[in-house]
Length: 152
Length: 162
Image (cartoon, each protein chain N blue to C red):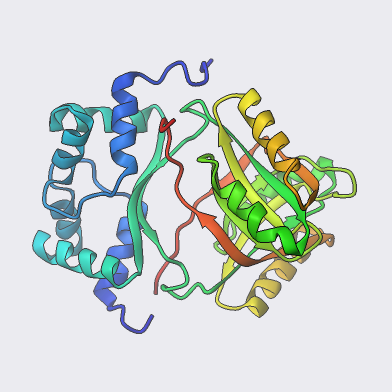
């Protein structure tokens, strides 16, 4: 944390919001920050290498692309945790998979293109050895989807 | 009305696949992405702009490693909100700067929690304080704090990859 300069924080705060869609996006960011393109690129490469910047990414609206998402909670025997977690990880649509405290101890998000695909995956997961409970927690409304950290 | 999955053209699928890869840290990144998608930079930029207008793209930008930038603690906090107050409480909690995600979800037998907030802070104690505060402000006392013990997978979705 201490290694981040004031410039780094300003750059990351700006870049978290919106990457310009134009031929020279880093030149445009540089202009907004009062510096030049080369400085922005050098600093971004360093921030990525040092591990602060995971990636520059595009956030898609999965519903608009024809995908439906859900959150699945499992009750898994402790001694089967690894095998169940690894089996869940194999599904492309299982993007986040966390072991958590509590009676439901494995939670994953799942994106699928059809209800049939979702049903099949959930049936397969429920049948894994060591899984003795499952909840399919569908969302109707997303009030906020915004992983943005204001660096000071 | 959107026909799920039917409206995404082959061109857009190629653009989406290109954007899902690593974003090049070079002077003309879209030129490289366009080459991956097999189109000109002009076509690529035009599609990205239009897909943003059509809300297929929500946002483009930096994804930080929150632990490295100082947000070392987070918790998925699920709340049991009376159904008639769900919308109002969800809207209020969504305005908190400490909350990154706020979704309603269906309940299940023995599981009365219908609102999920992802809270980010600098310590577990601070997560508890923030949740206490959110609960007090919104008059919701029943909650469960789902702290993570292990991250088994965290990726971005690879759309149209199968």
